[in-house]
Length: 435
Image: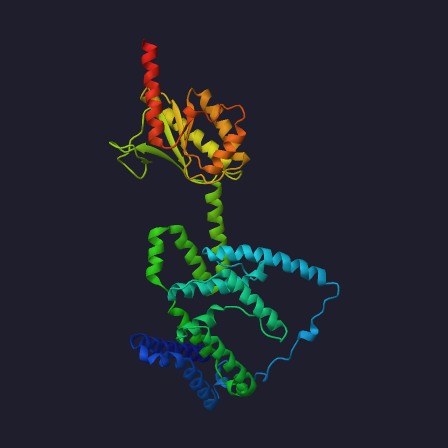
């Protein structure tokens, strides 16, 4: 048993090295592209001859075995539009189509697919194919339209189901082998399909003694060339969480399956998106000395707080999922500001909310602003809004029936304008009080 394992390992390693050398030579010398293209075929032929000559199947080498010849018979006569399962099939198709469109939209934005073993696993195969297509599109610098890919895969499966074909998809292993062979366009698929048809009709007995390790070695040698270590290092520098997602996808694909690996990556990505939606970012702004520019105090160390002003920037849409968190977070900002300024014997007069990044708001968000305004007024301060966008402004106006929420003195286009105007107002009030 150990000898057979060692033999398989040596055979696999030797073939991987040979294929790698052929690929490197074709990359250095483009005229020798045929070397990497023909190397897998030569490996299959030589390994099959060696197994047949030395009867290696009797010494622990696993072979493909006898395969059935010929093409599958037509199956359109088996299609039925009646029966107890027709309604269930229609419902399943509609639900699957709607959810697939959503998944493909996420794949177009960088997502992947779901697992075959999940309840929505039937959606995995098109998502995987499109995710694989995006990988090779990045290597060859072209774009992949997920919707068109979805339509093409669906049409091919409709045609294939009438001829007893296997499910059409864009498997990672076959795509990698095709790429490693030097394929440049979809014509390679036509050549490959004709080759497969000829093989099924006339050449199937020749593959009876082909060792399985050779097929694995061909796939491994093709996939290894797709590993981009500099890109992984770049991801680590940019975003540590994305690096962890990448590792989960990488090791999941290697040690479990392509579908489970991609499902793990998608699950973690969805968790991150939900966290960003429910925990939007709010930052405190300060003034850069000598200018009317206000920036994040954490990122711009030279920026300074304006006495009496708490300037906060909300950097996400406001909806029912994050409105409560935003209210609590802003109140904590106010408490921290008051605790800090209590030592300096100064008071908070204005809470300025910069809404340039708030692209949308719902009724829950509107009600939160009303509650926040009342809370701020109880503390002896005033709530000021800066640059609310069109949709946000329209909803706030519709909700402000009494006209005391969006007064002209509480609404400004820029932070600089708000600070200058309100500071001048404070000075005039002080001077009038003195007089």
